[in-house]
Image 1 (cartoon, rainbow, N blue to C red):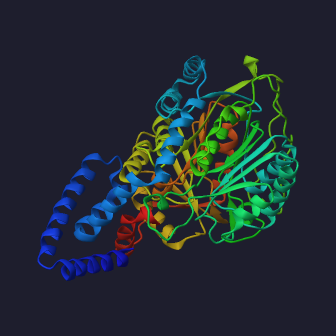
Image 2 (cartoon, helix red, strand yellow):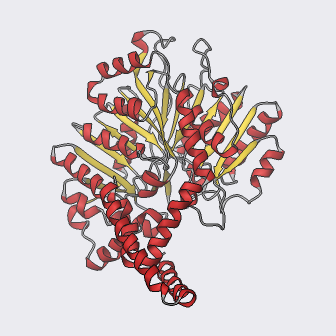
Image 3 (cartoon, one colour):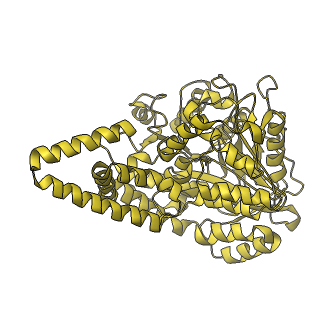
Length: 533
């Protein structure tokens, strides 16, 4: 990108001099003045200055090209039909989330778990996502894609009304082919089957005409944000969500995409450590709304979302009580069999098991919901906060928050990959180790392979499982989603998974986190452009 910027600056100055002659100097001067004003405004208004550092660097170092490019993208945002459609769909979707009794439920959740009241108020009040009462069958956590995939297949086979599927990557192979066969069969039976996949994420795994292939099979399909040779502000915002909704009764999310490495059917970067969460009951409605919001924005079709909502009196289908796990494939010996329910009815107070808040994040508003949820868990932690993330590219605010938690006595541990999928990003991840370990944060690298799970878990009480990496792209640029879990006994399943993963990981001591002057200079420069990695 630096080379492109330098060439752009040179070509733009040459063009101004060649075509405009003496006036070129005045234009360049005006652009420099505008650039200084833009930088001052970025410094004044930025919520996360490290994420905007690239623009400050480009504008000050290449005032003509950098300022012109920044102004072009700003104008593109204002005129982009795609961006306006996403804004409109997101605003319109808010009316579908909340119910008349939400305030009473929020009050009860805060009384039951006062330590998490800040998180509850943030997600329900500020971010606008409803809280749901959880019961013992409300969700199940699977510590590997290998564990969750058989359950996904069984639930797909049970579908009777509709299947909504939204993923960053789809790749033909054992995993997708088996799912695809079920989707074709269900579409032929008359079910409403819809697929969203990110065009960039699946660029190397699917042919350009794949959406037409699915449509010919009766599967409604839209590639998210088609790759275009015309530069536009929307092109940098990808759909990184992982959502599967079946009949409005069952939803799946977590870290896995729909490709063979995510279930360890093939080996690319050692053992692939990922996860799946299955949600059942009323909370599935939030995933349905998330999917339909993006579908509406991309299809430009308006429909009443409530036609896909399961009424409270409608029974929730039970799922497979056990999940076969192949010990030959699984490197993580966590039992993923769902717990048996002691009470058949979720209305019985004794069957209540905490609360669940599914949430999403979109990059086109001023909020960073994914980062805020992570920060709330970290700031509310008293005893421990364990984290799994494939990438670690943070701003100063997050680094300081991690260090402050460690300083007040919280056991903060972060697991990153031992085998990288992208060497440059792995180098940037390691460039944060020294600052973190100096502050008492413990860093571990997963020795058998690649950690792709995105997990925070704290104090046996709070956890979030989703799609949001600890890097600039996930936190600021992508469409993402997560599932916040509060007070459930099954939060211990998440903790157990992290604990067992720690046993297979090597700790990076503080003296080994120092990686040398030239390494720090190299990756210090790369970090300026981390938002584009």
